[in-house]
Structures are given as C-alpha cells and as structure tokens.
Length: 172
Image (cartoon, rainbow, N blue to C red; front, side, top):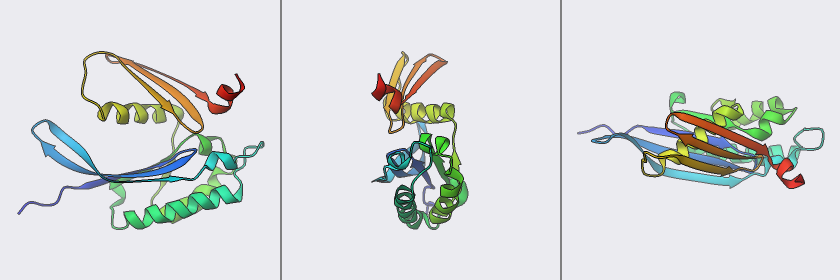
C-alpha cells in the first residue's frame, strides 16, 4: 500500500484578497508535480483600510483576522514545514503591520513572512510560469494586484521586473 502524497499549502495576504492554496505533491515520469486540491479566496480589502498616515484601521484588520482564522481551521494538522504564508505590499508599507501580524499569526497558526517586492515578483512569475506549458521563448507576465501592478519579462535566464504602486497609476 502506498503512502498518501504530501500536501503543501500557500497563504497569500494580498492587498485586496487573501488566498489559501493547497497542493498535492506527486512524483511522475516528468518529474515532481504539484496538483491543486483546494483553493480559498476571500476579499479582505486590507489596502482600503490604509489611511493617509499609512496605518491600517481596525475594521480592515478584523476582516483579515477573521479570514485567517478560517484558513487556520483548514490548515490544522499541517506540519509547519509544509505551509508558507506571505504578506505583500500593504503590510510592507503599513506602519502598524507588526500589530496586525501578531494577531494574524495567532489566528492562522503559522508564521507570516512580509516579503520584499523582488521576492513577490519571483513568486508571481514562478506561479504563472508553472501554470502554463513550458516554452523555449520569452515570457511576459502581467500581475494586476491590489496595491501594486507588476510586469515580469523573462528571456532565457535573464529576468526583469517592474512594479508601480496603484496610486501612481491612478494619478497618471
């Protein structure tokens, strides 16, 4: 009897939505593959609670904590090595991000890493590239995020990423 395939989970605390994706890892003749087995997306609108002084208001924080509690219930039983939770632009700029994150990690039950923009770009590109057939040519990925819009371009081993905060795009 074979052992069940291991599960991995990714949690994305985006500026507009929080996402939870669970995947099953399988070894195939083509190599290691990850198949999505569950996905949850909740509109939190965290960035909408960011005031002019860059502080998150309590209602937006509460919406985030409530969603993370539900995600945490789904992730109970997962080993910490099998879960990666990341926060992006809004929590990079919020002056009270640490206050939010303390309660957020408690609600989720796993550590949450506020990632730099370059790591966010790398993960977006990797996820998008993994979801389409392999190609030898160039790739262009456009990410329309809640707090930042990014363009990712890869030619062979060289990659370029450019991002603009949404407010800059709205003002132009």
